[in-house]
Image 1: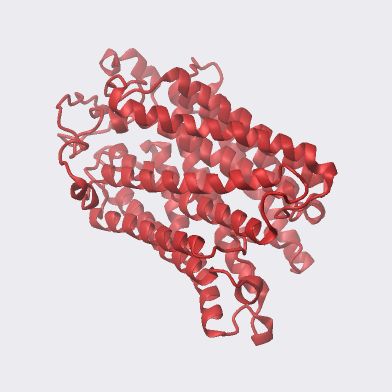
Image 2: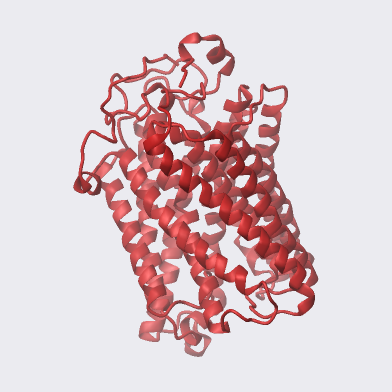
Length: 544
């Protein structure tokens, strides 16, 4: 890669224009990434408050804090906000938008206006869904299972379904924009197998966005149509089939797990190789495994329906395919571990988050094998074991990587450095708090405590107290970065163009980058992670 001279101009994308309108009408991918960051952070806070209320309710076995109707609305609010408005868009919308053109040497995404429209669509969908929650709430669970969602619930299901339907278009348009950008706008010399692994992860994620999101959008819309027009789509009394809903819902929602986790894997690949100063082990396998996960993810939805009445043969096939999807996931974990081997490892905050991701994702993945087994799944379905497994993947995996990514690229985004000590403390608190919250839930599920119950037998209280105590620590761990990252934007030391001495085109621009990204079109002449060459080339060394 040609080493470019970092631009030291005082003008950058943050100060090139001032005023609210310059942000609301911007077509700069970097500013749009920050708009998503604000919106997604607000949604994360709201979803987190709902989670806090749930854990406080479960502190005692008697249902002392809220009634069953309110509890049903609370866990539905938590699930809907966190899944559709935080976990799905977090890394692609925030960091994908900010980084993708920088990483491939482009000035912007292929369709800047469409990119801005995607943010407005996301905000509109979030606004409609929040209106549904604030004007009566939803009590169906984030899965919207029929026939309860179409016939039984008298809450704001139709409005919430409309909000999720609208937000789905944001994901589809973002995925389309990313795919066209990666295909058409790579700088000279940046061949497919010289692409950063984060770009490969975004490419695979975009495929799922385009192929899977329309299915869930239409499925949720059909729920609203059935409620509004009384048409028999899922209601057996009207000639419909409630199992059809589950097929359609999980056809998207299992690949959606990979929408949330594939970008995280891309982030971890970047961080692990940088802070171990080693070339990534098995680059091609990691890149190809991203595509394999994306494609296999569409073939395993039936393992969510082992107890829904599908045939034994179908169950066996989905069980086999579910075990198969573990192979490319395992390839990534083995390759990250091999990259660390004999590396010069340093434990800056992004690395602590990345190592935490590997540990938590591995536990989540291995417990997924229990649920892919027909007989074991029958015992564990709809227990707290499911809650624990799901959160180990989604919160322990996706949220951990999201925080790691924010810390890794924060100097590039803001031009400022944060408190490394506080960042490490935060990463450790998140890891410890997370395990104290969710590991007891594996035991609760194994012992038979069903999920979504707000009253439970007293013998489960001790484990629930541990879980609530862990949630308190986890909450502090999440709150700390919000404080010191915002503080750093004004008071943090100025960051150099490459404070980590990392590989990648994004580190060749100034921090924060200029509005046009690059003064001259960069040219790539080497592999993506040649850290031996980087460390031996003094021109790459930048001191903050």
